[in-house]
Length: 348
Image 1 (tube, rainbow, N blue to C red):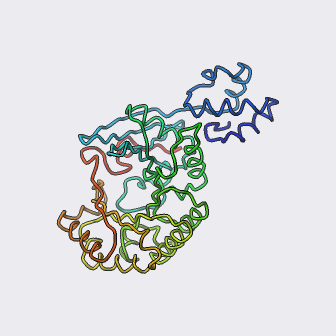
Image 2: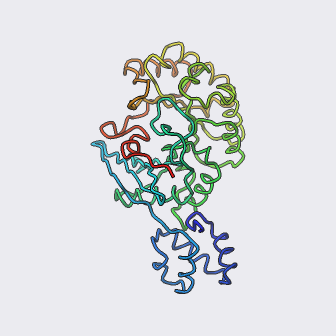
Image 3: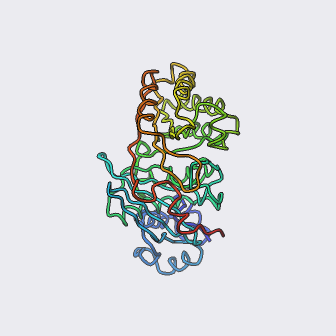
């Protein structure tokens, strides 16, 4: 069966050609899919015989919303059931500049970050491009909000599902699908080996966020097993390559955990590490300090507000552009993967 919502217009045309159908139908079908139809019968300008062929050969499925949690700050967390019974999460966040949706890229995750609920139970499977598009579209429909920005920062490591994520980016950017420009899309990665450099070669106009969380191998190994793929030095080399290749900004995410990575020495080491990327990269570097959302069973606790403020001052004093992320959804299952865990993760 073909996942037709993950197909580009030319690929649909090739499929139609094998069925002896005229290629102009591809544009019509692609347009209907971009409009979000839930069945082939809604494609009223497509002959019934062709619709019946498509039903036999193609999957056309939209996720079911299992749970909707709304925070007092307007954040909405959604749990979706996929075609195979697995569940993933999306989060809609209101900002002054519009509504952002944070989407998942995998069912589960293999990265093993100690502070994250998403990785408990490991990776089940990658999401198709269509399943990522559905999160954006259906999040808008369920919440009644127009989605203007996308953050690929939910369950999963996007660069561990590289090809499907790139296909999603191409489709979601298409004017006949959702038409959301690359400059309105952020991708967050822990930096698995080869991923950032491969992304740099595409020279996309998206915003790259890198989950750094520690300036040294000892601390980052403890928090993020992915660091053993070459260490902090390899990750920073990849980020330098990305900056020089694309001229695009990198936002380094730094989650502050009490007594783990939030000392004055950690701040000084972080300044030294980022300054080491060279003067040409400095205008493109930004640090986003993140107050930790506690996860049941995780070994870390949030840093005290005073420590967060002190860490921010140290970075700014060291010449690093720094902000503290506003905490959202604190009164619901805010940390990524928690809602899925409560629901019970299904494996195929």
